[in-house]
Length: 153
Image 1 (cartoon, rainbow, N blue to C red):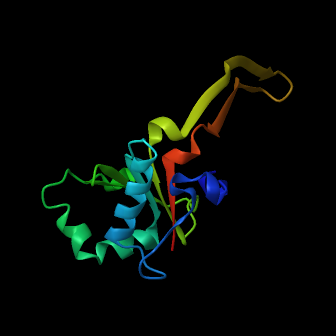
Image 2: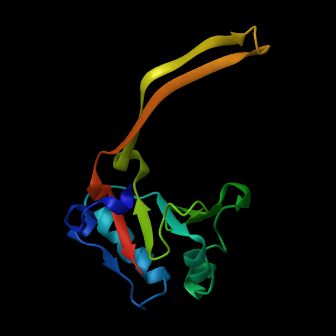
């Protein structure tokens, strides 16, 4: 969803280009964070693919930022905080390999419940099948695209 935002609607009015083509670095994250801060938002998340995570672990400045940082929760794909950003590694391929996102999660998007969860019983005597059916409707949309900086790698 965040990769579909037109460039001129992002923080800084364009995508942030990496300093070293094809590789994400600490400086690139700093530049993206600065773009979101200039739009008067407070970035709190860096979302990257697994290969971009590997790029960061090869950067000394990134590694040194964890010396006094918080703990790592690898099970959820959260690798801790640096620069006030929670680093989240996406294993679902939602974030393309050539993009990284710095996001203010409180302002960027919203998840709405359009219809509450409806539950009803289900049974067919002929097939001897019993159970329940549940359905609901939710929606997600972007509220403020200027709260998002997209890094092009």
